[in-house]
Amino acid sequence: MASAPTPQPLLPVTNPSSGSGSAPSSGSGFSDAALATPAFRLFLSRVSDTARRSLEDRRPWTELVDRSAIARPDSLSEATSRLRRNLGYFRVNYAAVVAVSLAASLLAHPFSLLVLLAILGAWCFLYVFRAPDQPVVLFGRTFTDRETLLGLVVSSLLAFFLTSVASLIISGLLVGGALVAVHGAFRMPEDLFLDDSSNVSGGNTTNRLLSFLASPGSGV
Image: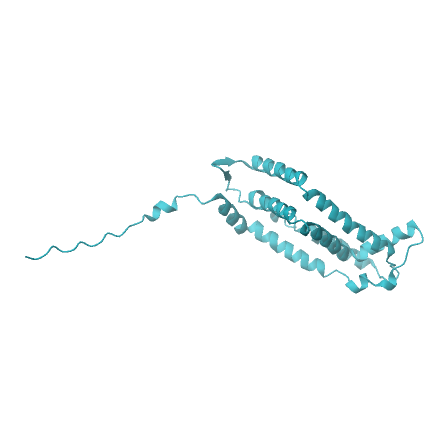
C-alpha cells in the first residue's frame, strides 16, 4: 500500500501594503525632510561660499602679530583712531579672533555646547527648514506653525537662562572683543595702506557675511 505524499511546508507570506501605511517616526521624518529641502541645501551652499569668499579678504597673520608695530598710544583719541583704522584693515582677522574666543568658551563646557547645538537643531529641523506641507506631530498631537514657534522660543529662553549657555556666549564675545580692542589700540597703523578700494571691499565682506541669512526666495 503506497504511503500518502508528504505535504509541502507552508511559507509565511507578508502583505507589502500592510507596512506601507505605517507612519514613520517623527524624529527621522523631520530630519530627513529638512535635509532634503532645497532651502537647506541652498543655506549650506551660501554658508560655504560666503565663508570662502570672506576668508579671501583676510590679512596675513604675520602682519597682525608684527611686534615691531606695537606701541602704546599717547592719548585716548590716538587709541580710538588706531582702533578705527585697524578694524577696517583687519576686519576678517578680528572676526576670526572673536569666533575662536567664542568657540573656546563653549568647548570648555561640553554640556552647554550640546544644549546650544540641540537648540539650533530644533530650530532648523522643526521650523526653519521644515517643509510647509509637513506638520509637527509629537505624542500624537499636531502642532500649528504658531504653536511650534512659541514652543521653540520658550524652550530657547529656558535653555539659555537656566543653563550657562548665555553667560558663556557673552563671556566669549567679551573676551574676543577685549582682545580686538587692545590690539587695535596698540597696533600702529602707519604701515597699513587702507585705500578706497579696501573700504569698498570691507562693505562687500560684511554683506557677504550676512547674505546667507536671507531667505532663499529673496534673490539676495
